[in-house]
Length: 287
Ligand code: PMP
Image 1 (cartoon, rainbow, N blue to C red):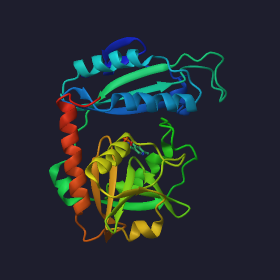
Image 2: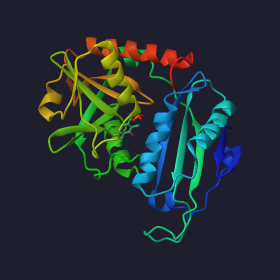
Image 3: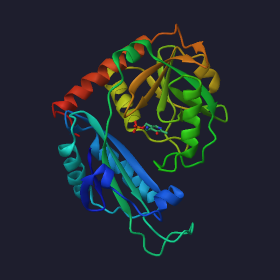
């Protein structure tokens, strides 16, 4: 049974309780982060904490902890975790209050941290790529907030499960925004394209890593809106996330992407990503 952190206490997951009047439960009024841990080293911790701060600012909730406090709370969860490789899930809600949409006079945020079983995608998946479907992005206009209110993402993700595929790629007004739980890239005529960060997508930590690696590797790339036609005509489509790392989408809505196999630019990026992960594991990179 994993040990978790809840509002000042470390305790077994099965003993953790929150009041039913918690606004996280009633309204999904909270934000979260998922941080990968490799060889007990946190991957891009500071970037995750910065994004947490941005999410908290967006929902007008004061950060209950300093960066230093977060670091020691998270480090302790990593220390206690059974596995060397996993993830840390953390969530901050606006806490308990009367059931009223308006903020309570004084919020007492609920802070929850737990280890998350997380394994890098199996080699077969990296080698074969995954199938994806498309759907209209019917979410709100603040997809840049990593909010716990994920009902639209849940419903969109389930569409791909129902279709036997790995992800739902979202199109809004004819342009690609992101996946239901990932960011997206395409390769067209040798050029790597990424949609620009905006209120319509989550600013992925993995998205940033991939663009940094593209720069470092001299992979030609451009950050600009990607149309539905460009997506459908792409030579390669990738999805990125903390849990999936970088994966090639090789079938889209039942049609092969390019020749139906992970492409050459993906192979380069995947190798660069694995190398980078190893430098983090050896503690040679900023964390
Ligand atoms: N977009 C959405 C909607 C997500 O839920 C996620 C994370 N699962 C991502 C993008 C990728 O973000 P990150 O690389 O920080 O995991």
